[in-house]
Image 1 (spheres, rainbow, N blue to C red):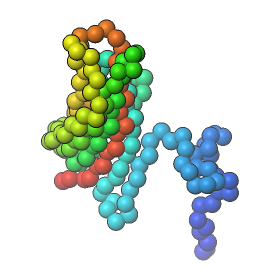
Image 2 (tube, one colour):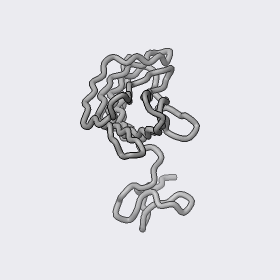
Image 3 (cartoon, rainbow, N blue to C red):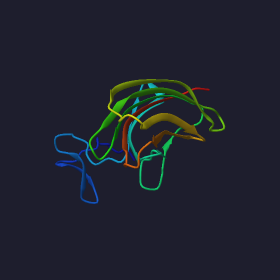
Image 4 (cartoon, rainbow, N blue to C red):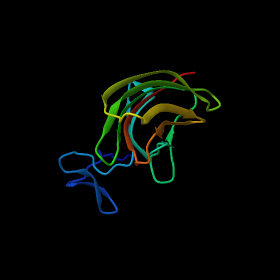
Length: 166
């Protein structure tokens, strides 16, 4: 029997368990992760993440240390806009552009990385640093704090473009 398929339609928006995900003005809200794909290049996708941490740490997506997942057989263009700040409001900020390859076994290799420091007000005698970190099917940033006992809060807004690379 033939059937007529209608396009998905939701007057007033779309919600999950009474939490609005897409409002009536077509704005996406309260998403945990967003994946964008191109219909012409189905072997690629774009993700956005927020990583956070304190002091010397591996930055994470949540309170239990979850890192960004990297798929096997992909080359990944990763851009992170970072901010480190102490309780006095001293700021270290910039952008890290990284290319990471993940092989068939999940081994990730940082192929290249470029750091652009936007603001560096780190007090004399202190060291604050942030570097890309790849592990098995994972990616994050490793931060270091030395020369102070003040808490340094770190946050990174990350865009990851993954392309299958076999």
